Length: 115
Length: 112
Image (tube, one colour):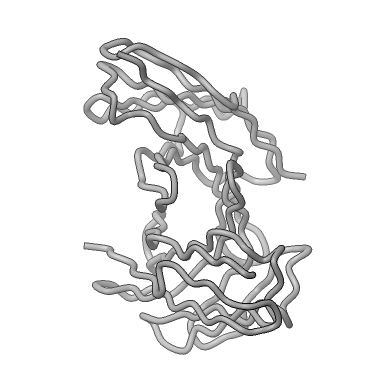
């Protein structure tokens, strides 16, 4: 159990366009979902935390108007990268957590390339 | 501030034992995790420590000393497939919720 999926797994977009990434918890209710970004050979950096039905909490330095997060249900969260630029090219990973329990369950990641 | 340190790279021989250290200085502590990550893939959970001592799970063991801000991951009977990055992450309670702060990761190369 505790499977998280992400879609798409890879996406290439042109500079200035927007891209939406979906994160789904397939067999559990994720009361909290986390979005991370990982640049090559670097570790995961938390971008934001969202609780179902409320606004996301963004980490310092992450632009909330550029990285729109929606957590409309207990099984779905979306991250929209608006007006993407080449420097936004990265590996985006989501994770879900249950109300009770300490573990986060990670999705397989989305490789975004902005040309 | 939050600071988690671990070696950047390590090499080891197939069949041997390797210990990956992690030291942390964080505002608040609510548990320490170790994850394995292969290139281009998501992290997979290895272990969780919240109390001092050793947790053993098959070929993997993890140790925690909260007073020293120190943990290690011990991998025994190394296999080629253990070549990966190993991420140390501390869970902290901040802003009303628990979140993970990750170290930069240790890239382990296992040689025949």
